[in-house]
Amino acid sequence: MPKKTKAPETQEPEFVVEGEETEEIQSKPARPARKRLTPEEREAREAQRAERRRQREEKKNKPKRAPSAYALYVKSKYDSVRDLPVKERLGAIGKMWKAEKAKAEKK
Image (cartoon, rainbow, N blue to C red; front, top):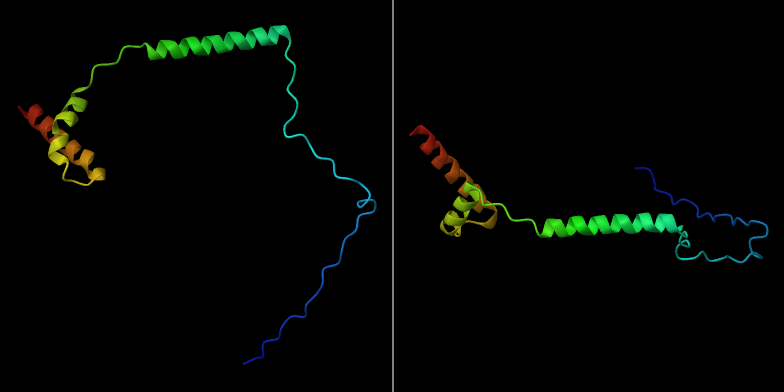
């Protein structure tokens, strides 16, 4: 077997940039200064915000939909599958739903 040899240790050369030591590092501001908006831009932005606010309020006050037949079925059958692991519960209910749906269609 060949004898393993250790690579000779080398020192990395120091790179010196002329004038680097005399310059002081200037710190940058945390974030750039805000752009000043013109009155027209400010007015347009406020109009956009008001429109978004109005849409959000409309969405809140929207009447809820009636629950679907499947949602009502899940709600009624959920207690029967509580003994199953959480991830398998809705799968079992789905299989029961398909079986009942197929049975209803045959009639």
